[in-house]
Amino acid sequence: MSKTIMAVDDSASVRMMVNFTLSRLGFEIVEAVNGKDALKKLDKKPVHMLIADVNMPELDGISLVRKVREHPSYRFIPIIILTTESQKAKKQEGKAAGATGWIVKPFKPDQLIAVVKKVLA
Image (cartoon, rainbow, N blue to C red; front, side, top):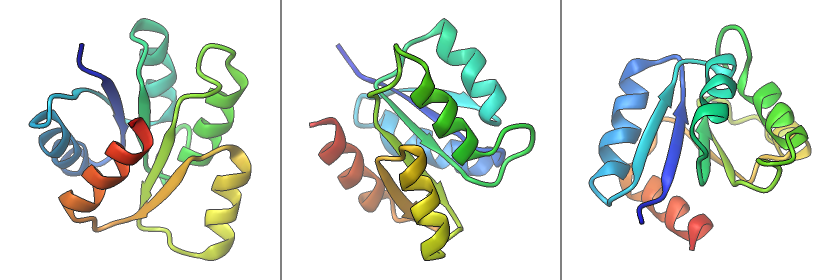
């Protein structure tokens, strides 16, 4: 059975790149355009991992991490932040919210694959 990963980003091109990179390895990808959309979709389809941007309209990535961690069914799924933000304070805020890892954009496909394989191993 393939594992399902949700890519949450307001940029269609980033979602497409994540989808292309991971679907060719056999992962099923669910896309969401922001945190609010992600929460709606999580209730319809369970996922094994979330990959989310920080800066998004309606519900940003760090707020999404907090909300997911409050939900008993999703409390322990890995959440990788994929963002242009690289400040130490922002990374610490993400970690405190419950993010599993942090990748700075632009990313290399091999880097994303390595993180996903390590976290889902």
